Image 1 (cartoon, rainbow, N blue to C red):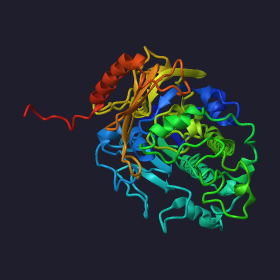
Image 2: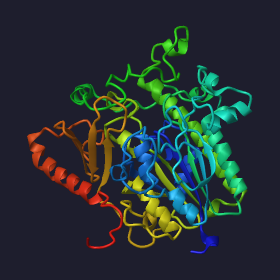
Image 3: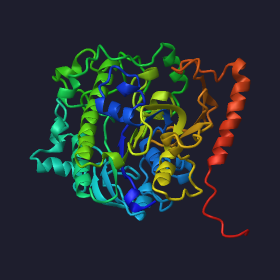
Image 4: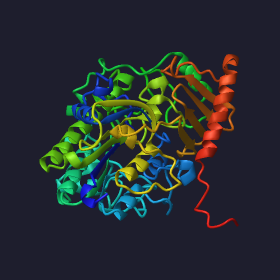
Length: 485
């Protein structure tokens, strides 16, 4: 492919956004007109799964096309990213793209420092691990806020939230537009990593007021969930299971524990699922507004027709489902299933909602296919290009996998794997004799765990064997062999 024919690539990745948060794909309680438009202009994958429910292993996986266990990047808090394999940004830089990072990367720890960079290929670097003022230097978003005459640390303590015009989501859009304008005459790749809708659930007040907690759809919950989660309480998770009327969260509005005298935080209902979901949707609304600005800039620069746009997230959020919030060692749909939309008006189909099983590992081989680069043999992902273009028989997966291997700094150091063939999902909590098994056709809400039922013993054995075979099939055997011995 000639360089003149190569498309630009805009990859927008939110943080902790569930699959069911887009109006055009079935959620009438959210407001996402710009994401809706993107979905109509391209292909929306409705069954896309991340490979870890935790940030760093998921991001490492989808930026390389390998599973976290093969990368040996299984945890948040790693001191550095390994030298091999190369990130997709490095591959694209070598192909001649100018590559820009805007926002979060989180391939290594940012605890007490800005994370150590890998050989990432980015020549434009505007970094923001999180919207906090925790780093003396190197936090480009905090420095941008200071350039506007404000202090980010003070803004985050305001019950009204950081104003929209100073928000990290807005900053991401500003810097993305700046990068695109600077490189309009070159092949560019923009990796835009918005921190929201990650906790704390503290959108700007003007956005929060757009959503009535009493009107949002409640979480997936039955009283039996508390008993089920009691059986799994030894397994790592960031929250304890509670009734959705009394979630285990400091506050859905404030980034710190509720302070006496702040009526909003102390009022009845401030911690229930409705307040949490409304705040979450408000954060997504701000993301949608800023996406609209970025897409408007593409149109103004006459770049839209030749720009591949990807919209996804690193993992989901429990949001009160089964009495849980936040994330950890569980594999319910709200936590491991994410949005995935692809749009390229010049070549991709439009108005397509695909029910194909998809992994985020499929992004790298698809991009390599688009820019005419060979796919190395270590990739476990599958190119989605035949689905996106409708050219040739579509490549379809038989299953998707997800892993949790001591991913968070929690006391139980849990290890678990998920295997899902679309009809059934099995989860093994390794070394604990515990698991979950769901018939997704009959029980899409994952309320009836079949794991211990004698009537499901044969099914459990079959799925266990298939899960084990899938794990072995995707293990990375090592560097290329040079000879027989």
